Length: 267
Image 1 (cartoon, one colour):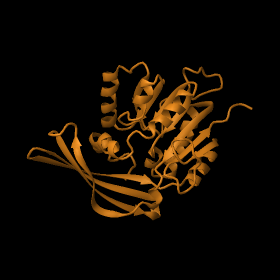
Image 2 (image 1 turned 135 degrees about the vertical axis):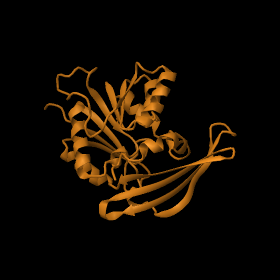
Image 3 (image 1 turned 45 degrees about the vertical axis):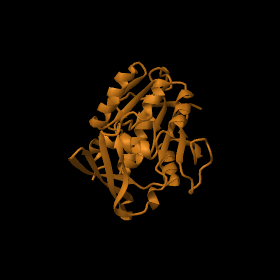
Image 4 (image 1 turned 45 degrees about the horizontal axis):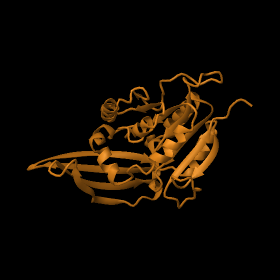
């Protein structure tokens, strides 16, 4: 199984589920980081635009990259409705092979990325060490000297409880009388391959009609120390380890796992 599998199927339900779980609790953090970056921003795995659209509305110039055409189609409709084309460009691409030129010391600020963001566990969808190494190397390549790489890991993946066919969420999408959605979820751990697999069953009900959608999402279980070592091997310097969205210090019990790293400039 590849880490990108399942995301096209997830696209119609992504915003509905996240509105009831994470919501937008992380958006002010990324917005503050982006507005103070001093240049263009690149978001890895921008999906439906949950983070990138609020940043664009705040005046941030950014590019959003995602492999999923279905996710990007939803984001593009919102960009058009919000008339945000001047601030946000969406690109369908693989984060392991970013379609942007290398940043050089003489790169103009308007052409280089001052900040690369990887919110809410996107790097954990890279299931092999080789894919993660490729991605970190490419982020380092496109990030301008002294630029920041900010990433978040899903905090409790390494110890996520296993369960079978649990009703995790249910509720209306849109106004009452529209579509009623039920999520039945199974979670299993694969310690030998350092993976957590979420088996999803979304049922849409409208009147007497119902439709079932089944797919799986797999994530790699990486701790903060494990990820920091990989960042350092890729040429980054660790700037901060954060345990909440207000800048609190990280420890292994924190609800939020954020790493800020810096690409060193010329000395």
